[in-house]
Image (cartoon, rainbow, N blue to C red):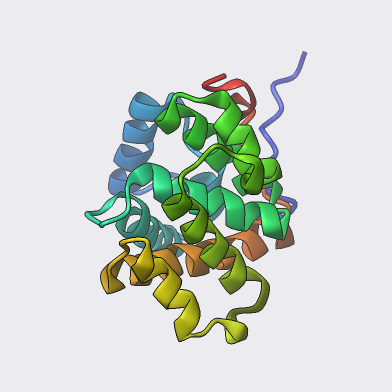
Length: 191
């Protein structure tokens, strides 16, 4: 049996070889903490500057201090990706919602139809806003932001909701455009 490399994208863009020491260290940390190197990082590894830019923005939006919890940001990622039908992000971030919430059903609901989820009105308003931005951003008005304020979101929180939403709209299009494949491990994780 031959050992064939895992398909990461439909494009023939091999990773820089050898990886720079900082990148190799980053991948080793991913392997240690996650048990894998996410395929999105492998996909970017053909251009280390692009990989570093992507990772810095992702880490800032999804992991840095925010009025939004990590779970809330992951829920936005999944709901936006569901609207956009982004296979990679629905699978990868759906697994993270399952992990962070401890609720496999919630992860599936975010992928399939967040409106059936047993979530509070505040979270529903946040996800409705993310969907509105995804489906028709030019139609979002002050009234939409006021709904979020009415649920206790600060203007900084609204910025973060819009930023996470915008980021996943971009990455969904890239992932779909290059047929980025999720790591197989995500499918069975945290169920």
